Image (cartoon, rainbow, N blue to C red; front, side):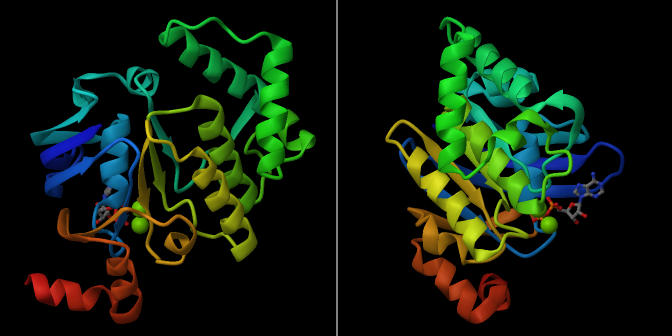
Length: 251
Ligand code: ADP
Ligand code: MG
Ligand code: MG
């Protein structure tokens, strides 16, 4: 589903290479986790895949379902089924959460050649999905993420994901800043979306999220490269011995 080959990325503003040859394939139905120390390039990878400005691909490729992601505008990538849940969800003053979701869902449906949802059908769907994530009606009426707590913002990201039904979901440190209960809610939300037609890339600094979202494959990223891949046990190895041992092993 997602196929990244030898991806090299540098910053547009300065001559700094951040990704130095990333190879990664995420199959439909699988959950791949990426772990790695701070500054190793995990967020950069998610930004480059989703089409954020400020990065230059100097070598390599990234395809979603055989389509060249890197040639597409950010909104085309979203329409093609890519979803990024942000490490730091942005506040959008003046845009109601409900309006935002409805606009996004209908744009997505249009891109897929489906009819727009009626107001009543949309309302039913959003209420049902919000309830599962313990997002109350008041949060749906407020501007997107404005005044939301850290946990509420992350749950709102998962609500967006559930509403948009993406093919490939990227979660960038969605667990950061969450207490155990909020993390469990987020994990349950993700697990409910696991599907044989959908792939996940779960980026996390700590292993604890992976107790709840058990990945099929774990990758370790160090200094812009994936240096080791393995099963869920690899996450436990990191938890027990830190990244230093893997870095030493690789060196
Ligand atoms: P991670 O998510 O693994 O913590 P990042 O992708 O955020 O890593 O960052 C990788 C490296 O690139 C870091 O050294 C970071 O400081 C640098 N970096 C990323 N984006 C920018 C930017 N826009 N300007 C300056 N440095 C950046
Ligand atoms: Mg970081
Ligand atoms: Mg990051």
